[in-house]
Each structure stands twice: as C-alpha cells, then as structure tokens.
Length: 109
Length: 115
Image (cartoon, each protein chain N blue to C red):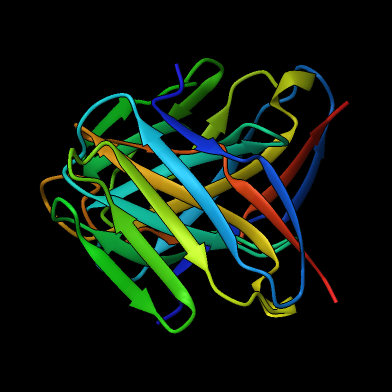
C-alpha cells in the first residue's frame, strides 16, 4: 500500500500567494526527497533532507523535515507562474523508494 | 553526459502484444528503477535493481519483467500487454551502493497506450 501520503492533491493560488504541501510517512525515514514535475515532463530533484528537524531554503522554497522524521513540508512564498507543476515527496523504505501522490499546483496570473 | 535515456517516447500496443521499454544511463549508477505514473496515483515502483545481476520487485510488479546484465541498461518487458498497463513509464537511476538514498535522475518517460 501507499507508504507516503501527501496533501492537498490540488491547489490553485493567485500569483503572489503562498503555497504549502504536506507529506506524511507511515514509518520513520532515513531521508526525504522532494521533486518537481512540470506538465508533460519528468520528475526533477529539488532537495534532500536528512536530519531530524532540518530546514532548508532554496530562494522562495522552504523545506522542513519533522522531528520524528515521519513528516515533511514544502512552502513556497509568493508563488510565480514558473512554480506551476506537481510536487512530490519521496523516501526510501529499505531498497525501495516510494513517492507521495503529489500536489498539483496551479498559479493563476 | 546524456543522463538517463528512454526509448521509445510513445508506443501503442494491442492487448496481448509484448514489448520492451529501453532504459540506459551513463552516470555509472548502481541503483536503477522503473515507475509507472497514473493520474492521481503518483509514481509507483514496478521493479528496481541495486546493481548488475540483481533485481527485485517493487509495489506493482505483475505483468512486467526486468533484467540487469550491465550497469548501464535496465530494460522493462511487458509480457502480454493489457489495457490496465496504459500509463506513463519512467526509468530512474541514482548513485550509492546502499540503495535509493541519493538523488534520483529520471528519464523523459515512455507514454504507452494499450488498446
């Protein structure tokens, strides 16, 4: 079954608004990764978080890894039309790698 | 470096036909995997390999076979195509001998339709 749950499934925002997607794992993860997939494209790696409570920033994107290493979030400040796409979290379970169901972000200009 | 390449980009099959989706990487990555992507389902792991000669099943392996004779290549075979296998297929690779603990590099995908 699905090991990694992600909410919301869809999010529509006005350009300039903030956006957050949440990821929850059924078990503790050694690390969590985030990917972005543009419409018609393939997933592209954004970042990896490893430490409990870790926070990393990439320009307007802020990534957090929960204290228990079972949840994570991605926050985008002041969205732009270039942020459009689906954002996936993913984590390893043994030798297998599971992706969340993704959050599809639409930015309305 | 070409990264991860996949062929073909598009394919239409009739029910019962077989075919092989090709995947190759030139980054000397040990870990390779195949995913299928369906609307609302995210990416689901079909099969993976931790090195040449070693493969294992993922979440949705039924109807698919894989082999890994070289580090570079990881083909996915559909034995007898069914409409339920209509999907977008992605191949991915990552470095690291211990498993998928590093960045995954994805190929451009193969869009398969089974009629």
